[in-house]
Length: 186
Image (tube, rainbow, N blue to C red; front, side, top):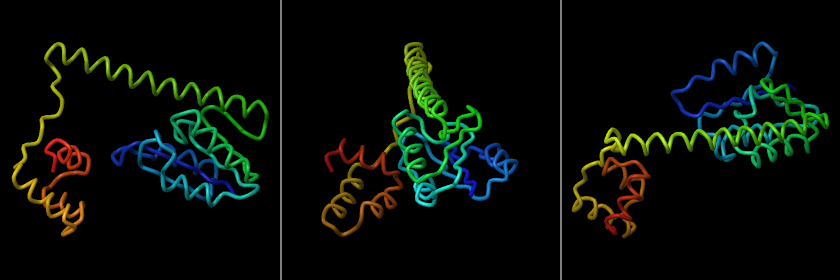
């Protein structure tokens, strides 16, 4: 079976280009994740890896859609190959059933990881320059009623409500909630 794996980094991004490429190739089953590729812990990637069997061909639009670091990409490709299936990347023309394809996968994986590191470095440099020029102050800190926050956290700590319920009551996302728990010692 011809299997496609597509990924976009956010829910707002559009996967249409990848899906169209798969349709043109007659790919029968497509798995799609809408989250960052920095981790291989993605539900549809796991589902695809569980589904793949001997003789299947797993196709990605580019290796960066499968993984953003060399270790994860090579691990994914190895898992596919260990099942007797083939891993193909359209953009880089990589087919892991050949020795050259395996070598090229490693080279391109390292290049994809390097590009991600460059992006992060350029972003950090840009933010530092903008901060130095007074143009970037970051996201404004959300105002919060400390007494109400501590009161709700006490209910959570006492086992009277879950962390999720506490976050809902306080209208906070998990990252903000746990950061404030640490900040306020709640």
